[in-house]
Structure formats: structure tokens, C-alpha cells
Length: 85
Image 1 (cartoon, helix red, strand yellow):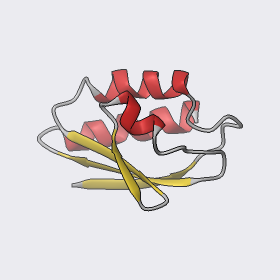
Image 2 (image 1 turned 45 degrees about the vertical axis):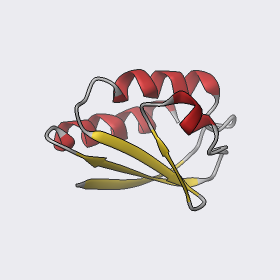
Image 3 (image 1 turned 120 degrees about the vertical axis):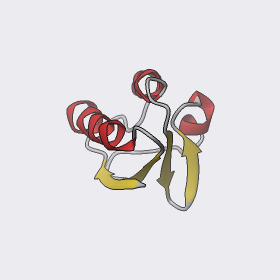
Image 4 (image 1 turned 90 degrees about the vertical axis):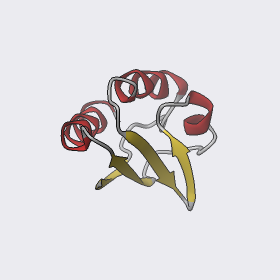
């Protein structure tokens, strides 16, 4: 299992467009990928699950990746967060 934390820098937080892009990336991997914000957890492969977390600018989220391709998945997810959020 791989885990990382990231503080959202995007003014709009995790808006629908960003959530849709991260969903596409997450679906490329076999691993289960979840995101936690303020004690609530969502599945990064399900759009409404992510939108329901209401992730805002300056929120620190925890992303957990678990599965056969977790190393590369965690690396690419972190890169996405750094470049887009």
C-alpha cells in the first residue's frame, strides 16, 4: 500500500473538470485508489464519490493506492496532483 498527502493549491479546489481528469487517470490502473478529506473517503474511480468530498483550496487530502501496480499508480497520481491541483 502506498499513501501520500497533498494540500490543494487550485483556487477552485477539486472541481468537476479536475475530478473528471483524475478519474480517467485512476481508471488506467488495476489498483484501488481512494482519497480522504476531512474524515470522509471517496473512490477516485467514481466521479460522484470524489465530488461528494467537497475538496476545497488548502484542504490536505490523503490518497491511498493498493494493488498490483501501486508503485507506478501512486507516482503518477502524485504527479497529477502537483501539476493540476
